[in-house]
Length: 458
Image (cartoon, rainbow, N blue to C red; front, side, top):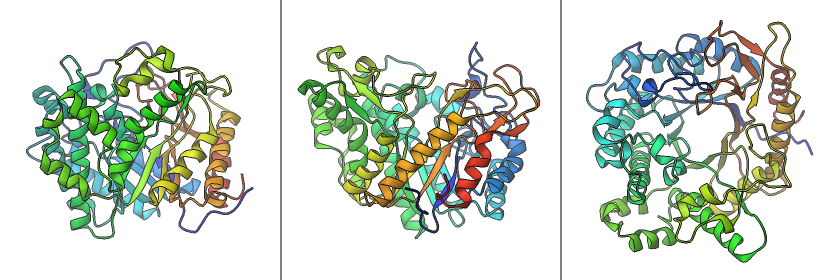
């Protein structure tokens, strides 16, 4: 089934600033935690990335040629507020001002994400990141400033990229935490402070910019039980509640999950969750549900030690699914899972759904002459877009758009340039910047035709 998607459907690209911008010491930018990370055998440093700070207009021209009408990007907190708190940097703000105008001039709708893991170094060193409530307060101040600066021109907003990562052990890496024992209490502090920042900025956007839309975003954890054994099913259900539904309940106006709050009480963490916080959470409601999705997971409860906190289940119980193919990175390809997430989101919450990251990372090399023949990427996106269409036309889901992840090659989340997601090749390696030339792959023309037909011609 190939049906034309509704008018106004958003097709586009998602990126983060530290994976694209470079210019780490230009334009008055302060240091972030990524600026001090050193290169390794399979990871670049973050100082140049794909140099979009200097080359973004070239990338915007490619997006326009593809027919994209939406671009989700991140504002670098330390570029606009070098110390994370204190004085704002007019030169950094002016950069994003031009950036947004140049998108709009090409008919591309900007979507701003305020945080994508790159904590200002000063806040990480002084407060240990989001483990401290003072960093929550600094983030809210920064977010309000960005809404004041850009809210008249930007309709779609996100506070945090993949917010449920702050409920996983990965929170310590992405939340600006530099030192400590990484205790369960600290994990709950981080996740709650991040949620409060999201809630307070949602209220601020709604109060000051009527008609502008705030979304909540997950790295959706679609986890199957390894067998039909009741404990496998129960553990997979618990994991879904703690890592997905708990946040979705807040976004939809229901507050935190009772099951999660029961753990908060049992562990003695209730002092983290102030009464005034819960009152703010009780009155929040987001405008759309956003998520990233690349692969599904499978959980084997036999591998989970007794007493393991639910947040850590997948660290112990992750198991390969024998019914799915996997990429060379071990990510299992599951388009039907994509449909299941979209359909359930709309069934459960009745808010517009927006998948804003989806793609396949593959090791690729360009011969310097011929376009890369990436039929595997065409197949991946075709099958996932078809699954999205099935969710819309067969299951009745309301979907705002589809944004691919890094449709122009960027550094991976681990800094590895070998892992490429783009329909446009960027000519650099981990340790050899080469000329950074942008080279369309075979999938570029396929995607161009798909967008021009609004999903009909796959």
